[in-house]
Amino acid sequence: MRGDLSHHLEIKGACASYGRIQVLKGVDLTLGKGEVVALIGPSGSGKSTVLRMVMGLTLSTAGEIRLDGEAVNYRNPASLRRLRDRIAVVFQQYNLFQNMDVMRNVTIAPLKIKRRPRDQVVADAKRVLAKVGLADKLAAYPDELSGGQQQRVAIARALCLNPEILLLDEVTSALDPELVNEVLDTIRGLAAEGMTMLIVSHEMAFVREVATRVILMDDGQMVEAGTPQDIFDKPQTQRARDFVGKILRH
Image (cartoon, rainbow, N blue to C red):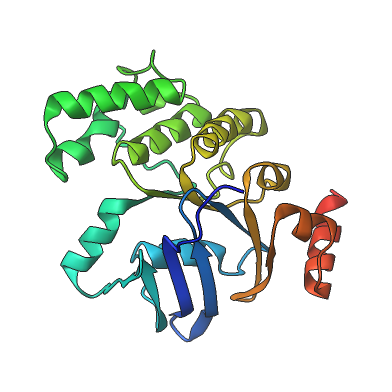
């Protein structure tokens, strides 16, 4: 099993609300270095909110998040900046700049925000774009790319930030079915290289293949956690049996 025994990222007792609606109810989650942890469950169960909370886009109302044992203070700009220096996220919508070509989309954050040397950033971008199969698309604009290619640009953009942890939020849900595999192949490659990832996905065959652990969520809570074999082949809770039974019939 990939990953060491240290908790690279640790979420303890996290709660979150949107207005009066509580969407996370005491979530406990650990992510070791090199692990690929997948969050699965029905829509509205809180999966994406976990990722938004980690990135500071949704503030928790209770609990804490630790990175390598150090608590993150999301209300402190310096603490939040340190976290975002180490964690990158890719959402289901590509959010590319339509007026910029692929190279510019991928390099703008390292150049403008991280202020890294241009030669180094451009070299990194070319390497990462080749890794995701887009070495021949450096000068292309988003409207010249397929949805799958745009999503791979979004993944390359995140990787160019040199993150230690990559969060992926339903990155194939907005794609036509024939474009899904090219994005999943990119993630498979990252998993094989040992990238630490926390993934929200509805692609269950893919989750079974790449995840080291799977966590089933429902109604803002973690219902069951285990290896893919544990969750899909021998779920322990009735809720997990119901969920797995439904998805395996389709």
